[in-house]
Image (tube, rainbow over all chains, first blue to last red; front, side):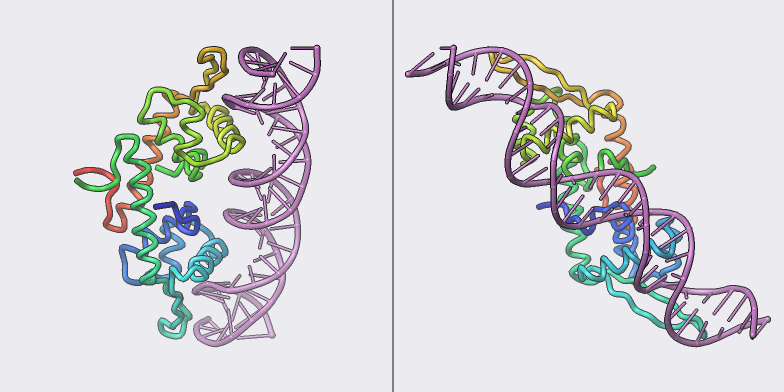
Length: 100
Length: 100
DNA sequence: CCGTTCTCTTTCCAATAAGGAAAGTACTTT
DNA sequence: AAAGTACTTTCCTTATTGGAAAGAGAACGG
């Protein structure tokens, strides 16, 4: 049970948590929610894709290009494991990260 | 509600969570629990002290020098805020870091 | 006394990461 | 043709990290 460095970075943790809630999310939506620039999101998204945690799908909305991000199954597993590791660490202090 | 970079680093998160549970902890105990070398713990402890989050007390056990680490009040506050920020992020995904 | 041990602290170093700015790509719209 | 959309890459500079090794100060053993 250890923290996954790919997921632990603040920006990526936010991206992954956001994607875990949704099926797919648009690049622009994620960028705005996380509050980063295009270039920063693009780089982090590539890093997550490189780790096999996120799938990047390109398509169109009308005639405009659009990119969607989606947590892959391994990405979801890694995220759950990461949260479990956080819970284990935080639990030491008497706090909890999980219900019950 | 944002992640505190001083606390977010994996090693320091573990140190702070450990200290949050105890009043004071010995350097050697923390080093072994966290699983780092003397030099690494020494550096992180200094970083936490520099941020005002940890107090470092030196004393003796018999005739041997010993160092104790303790979370300061600001350190505890920063830790609680950090955990709250983590909870907020993780909560997006439908998971929880808090009881109830 | 000298060398070793104990308990950290510092220095040195090499690797990695991260962000901002700006340029680039590939189209589409005006 | 010029400008805009939606990203992607490159460039560059700063920050962080960890391991290894050397240091520091006191105490113990022979």
